[in-house]
Image 1 (tube, helix red, strand yellow):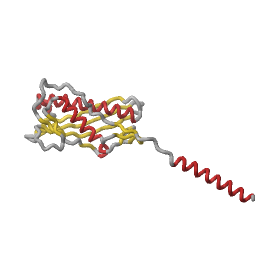
Image 2 (cartoon, rainbow, N blue to C red; image 1 turned 90 degrees about the vertical axis):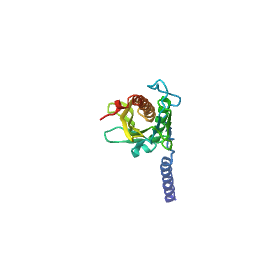
Image 3 (spheres, one colour; image 1 turned 30 degrees about the vertical axis):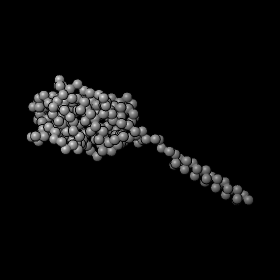
Image 4 (cartoon, rainbow, N blue to C red; image 1 turned 90 degrees about the horizontal axis):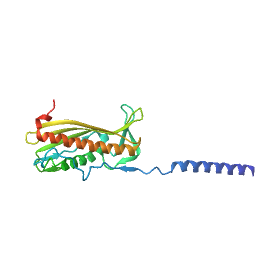
Length: 215
C-alpha cells in the first residue's frame, strides 16, 4: 500500500513537471508588428524650376545588399555587428520600398514630364541608378540612437550612355525610443529626407549638368 502511494506521488510529480514544461513551451509568441515606409503620398517638394520639365526620366531598380532584400528591421549596437528586431518586420523589403519613395518624390517634384518605372519600354532621356548603402537603426554607446538611410545615385544621359553626375546622400534622424517603433519612425523621416535632397540635386543637374560632375 505504501509503495502504491509513493508511485502515485511520483506520477503526480512527473505530470506536474510536464505541465509546467509544456506550458512554457507552447506559450504563444508576441504578435509580429508590421511597419511601413511611407512614400509621402500627396507631398511635393518645390521644384528648382518655374515650370514642369519636358524630359523623361526612368528610375532603375534600387540595388542593395542581401540584408536589404528581406523584411527584417535591422539595428546595430556595436561596430561590425548587425541584428534584427525579433517580432517586428517591414511590410516590404527596403530596396523595394525605397523604389516607391524615389518614384513618388521625383514625380511630385515636377522636374520631369514623367517618371518611368524600371519595366517601362518607353525611351527616357535620363536614367537614375541607385544603391542602398545603409538602412537601419544605429544605437550609440551613450544611449543615443538614430535612423539612417544612405544611398549612392548615378544620373545617366541615355543618348550618350554617359554618367552626367553622381552623388551620395545620407540622412540621420534621432529616434525617440530604443525599439522598433522608434527605429521605423526615424528611418521613415530619414528616407523622406534623402528623397527630398535627391529632388534638389536633380533640380540643379537639370539646370547645370556640368556643375554636378564630380571627380
